[in-house]
Image 1 (cartoon, helix red, strand yellow):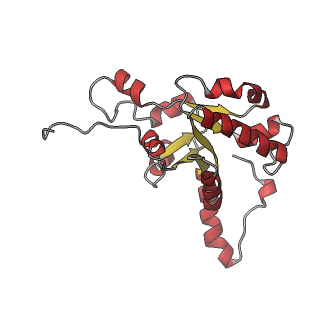
Image 2 (cartoon, one colour):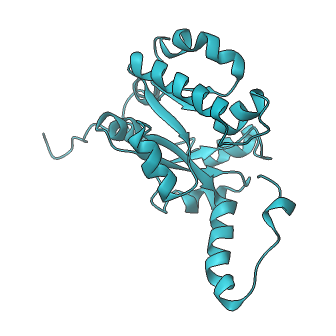
Image 3 (cartoon, helix red, strand yellow):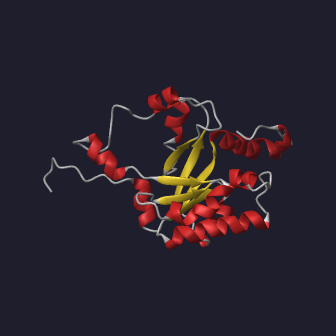
Length: 205
């Protein structure tokens, strides 16, 4: 390789998954370019920009996406086609009957299970410890494995990550930047005898 040649850039999330390594994404809910830019320096492998349950707009997302830069030289269109991952989110009970067709769709690289919405869709009000939800998750995961797709799901703690990795999951949506603020505040204030509002009195996002 000549000195002026650049190494070929690869999608780092895909590269980790193909190597059997987990990929961790911080969930972004605040419509702030500065917050997202800072979050990108904290060690997470990607940012999961939450546009369904937050005030982030397409305009804000465009401002925060380095719209004028791309890590590979040459044609953006060709390199984007090669490097962008297609992740299918499964979170509706109606998808269970079609899960083999979904997992077998050409071009889909990962199946991500939206466990909270799936629980609600099953009539379980978001509860995560229900046998019906666990059965649905296992059914989706089995289909993903049959079709050679990577598996993803949310995780809130290192203990959950380790347990889910034992079940074959590698792609993780971790808590929000607001969740990190809460975690940091608890670590700082609780030893001083100070606590925030009870969980039941706070919004989910």
